[in-house]
Image (cartoon, rainbow, N blue to C red; front, side):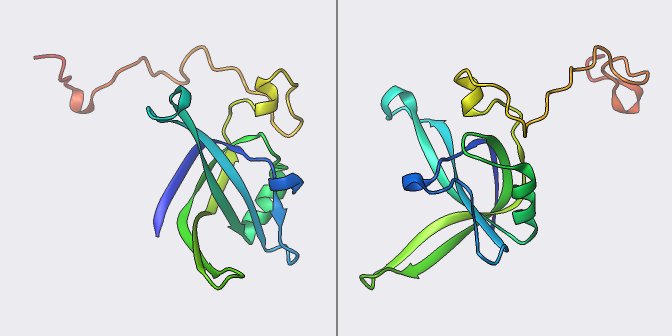
Length: 152
């Protein structure tokens, strides 16, 4: 399998008014789509969307539920690339790539709703301020072995 790391992707809204996040009847699988805007010199405005299917199994179902994921939320996903193969109603073999999520977290950016002027969602914690000085007695650059490659 190929390892995949997706950063700063937005959870896509559901297709034709379906829910954005779907959980199987057994509660052992979850699936949704994410989108990421990427640079493309041949696309209008030099940008286009890449959309990916995400599936999670067993513990990932609980993780997604606890995170209260919904459309418009930016997330990071670590997983592996896999392929679905099926026969459609016309008897043709169809294939589709998807990501099997192994870990998921909020991306730390604003949701699509926030960036369009909405309020902070209840499921996303406030960001802590950055420290003004380094902890301990670290004063900056320290070389290995006591010598610096800057000192010739």
